[in-house]
Length: 162
Image (cartoon, helix red, strand yellow):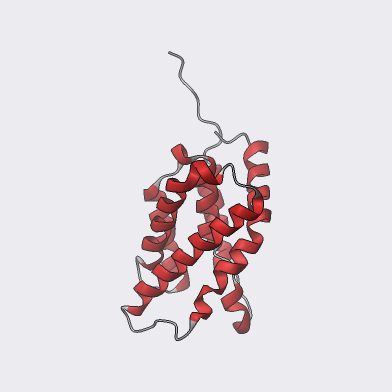
């Protein structure tokens, strides 16, 4: 039996790091509710495209780094991102065959689940959002999903990540 050599798997953690940097990129105060959940989008892409190469431990580590960078409670994003990765893993066979608008709709609901879990954990510390404004990143994430998906797919094919 021939051994299959891994090709450019370093790209996966690198895209997580780029997504983390985009999560802390400075925005005006009024625009903070419109920032897409870049790390969740990248996790969804890799889980759907290459589920056998995704590590839940790495996802949890990146989420803890996001907590540290954003000043959140440790584990807040971790629980939400692992839940999103699990949902994406459950639906990955279907999502691959959806057209782009259907994928964006699924991403909308997955990122909404991320935001709900994130807000739920944040509420334990008495800091829950007073209104549904915290769900706005789900809508912006769904709107940019086609661009993220096409860009990440182009990167995956160009660098021959397998």
